[in-house]
Image 1 (spheres, rainbow, N blue to C red):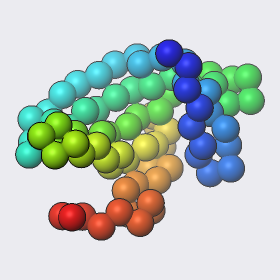
Image 2 (cartoon, one colour; image 1 turned 135 degrees about the horizontal axis):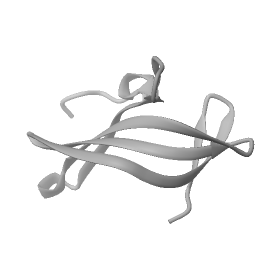
Image 3 (cartoon, one colour; image 1 turned 45 degrees about the vertical axis):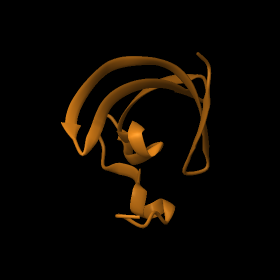
Length: 83
């Protein structure tokens, strides 16, 4: 699977999922460690994705460099919680 992500004026090319965990909440929270290519160099990122399949709901909660502070969270995207 090849995908493209935009992060703070960078263009990331998805390489692979390195690690994945599931946490049961009101739905499922997926904790993913991803490898992506930025300017020809591989970098690791962590993402949290909240899924409620019965509501057709998917929300990116957090996306950050694997050893860094969050690159952005759902609040940066203008998401209104609880709606």
